[in-house]
Length: 341
Image 1 (tube, one colour):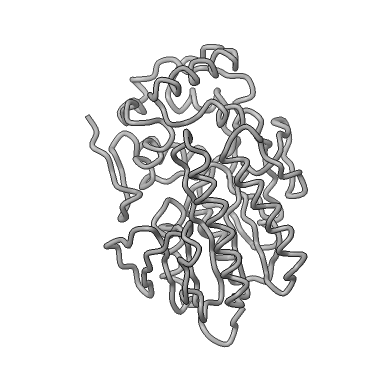
Image 2 (cartoon, rainbow, N blue to C red):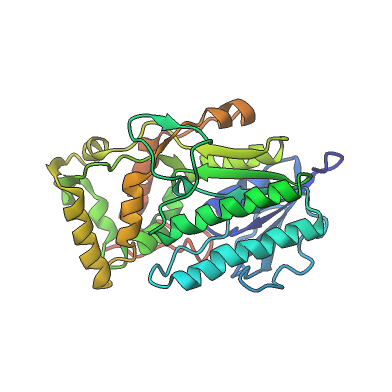
């Protein structure tokens, strides 16, 4: 890392959920001299110290000379949809990442910070948390998990072959902020699920599904972990999540709703039927993976990076629900708001 002057940081996926939070944080960081935001579509948004480049990582020569003189690359770019075309998401997410990794090494960029995920982890416990040594083989039936796990193996090889490159892998829980609410509704719930459904009075009953216990994190808190990693000499993986873990009882309190026990197979069958009818974009295989995700211990991020989330998981979900109710959006095309009825 260049310590003699302010850093030049390149961020892929800079117009998305995490990208907008990170670019905003870096723009206010006096130790960052300039930010190169890379995205498929250049936004009108113009934060300080930031320039933009239209880049499609799926194109093998997309990066050109963009990484020349860059001190660190933060790789956030990811395509979640279409879940019905895993070959397309593989091309963008995996092959695009391989193109980026090769370009980082060829340009001699000292630091690569890669956005992995809790979804990279193999099935694990729900009654206690695991650290970063837990296996990262994902849930093989879900494309998102397969792709995240595959890139973990690629980075294993890169670390062996090029130890001079500092590689950091962030493994965050589910990431939410108010400005990403409309996008996340489009990606995971679909256009037939209205935002006002997030109002407590609209959901008097909530399903209580065995195994549905997950972690969440405010996107701004994730961005802070990325920023701290850029200014450290840390390597390796970091779990990122806020307390407390979210289960049916916690969500029922948020909605002031009554729980109704629902077997996981019944819930999956309902989702599979809706997915088969193109009513929702989230696949039943992703639901299977969520039921198997381990809870993560975030002690390493606290101890090595000095990272502590400012928002609880409950506050984060409350902010998401507020965004859903009001069709909240952000300053870029991927985060465009939605009309609510």
